[in-house]
Image (cartoon, rainbow, N blue to C red; front, side):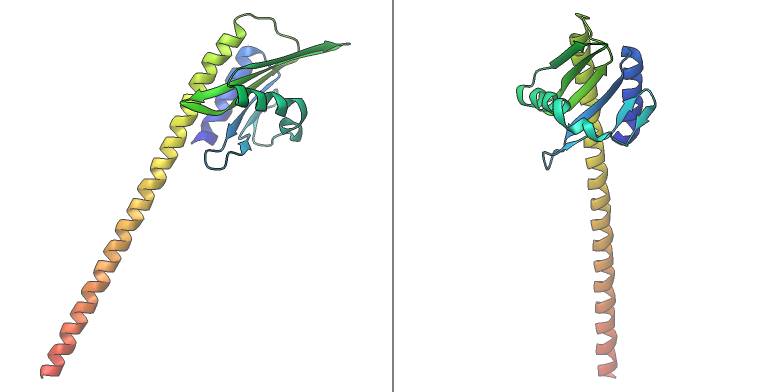
Length: 173
């Protein structure tokens, strides 16, 4: 299940990159709406998503990454604060979302964008596989329910036919 896998993946990613936080913004396949299933910061993974995630500059970076299919980088420094945010499109046949990684300080690693794109591709594959698995489980359950319903109809038919035969027998007597 995607909800079981994503928190651990995001926590490992955040720790490995020494990031402030990271999250994935997914495009819902049927509606096209954006959804953030898990958010991960120093306090650990959470399904309680800070409201500012889908507003302002974060949303602009997410939308740009979705629109252009290219990674987006935003870096700023001023006064005592500096930050860096990476927006990585998650692609598997098509774009399925954006991975966002935020750092407290501007990052100048030349390898970071390539590393994040590679990780994004792997994460997209995991997400797509989870979605396909969940879909196949639903289809199998629906098929099993149809078989049960057909068996019930068959049993009702048998009972009705048996009842009709009994009635005919009584009429002959």
